[in-house]
Length: 130
Image (tube, rainbow, N blue to C red; front, top):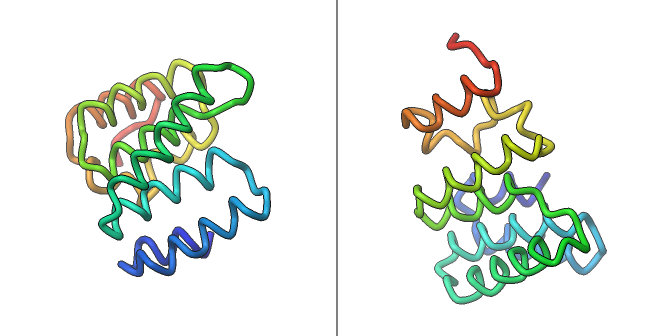
């Protein structure tokens, strides 16, 4: 959680440090790896972010480990690829991905909250506009 706070506080280098430590400590791979890819993007390390994203996609495709489509969508969100963000969010809805229950209030998604595709996803999940 501290790494995400660093990331949202524009302290990308500290976020990278904490996400790398989380991966080395064996924390949940998908969540820590997606956070690391986002932090790499924020730190201007696009090649590193792409490498981590590729590993997430490979592990998901293998079917040997659960990788949430929501985590992949988050990486695309931070990279600025809105089309892929929404493609993967749609997949997350279909697979009933964890954390989607917080989509309507999770500040990580504020950058796309006003997008009608995001609003459509919230509606599919049964959230009402407040």
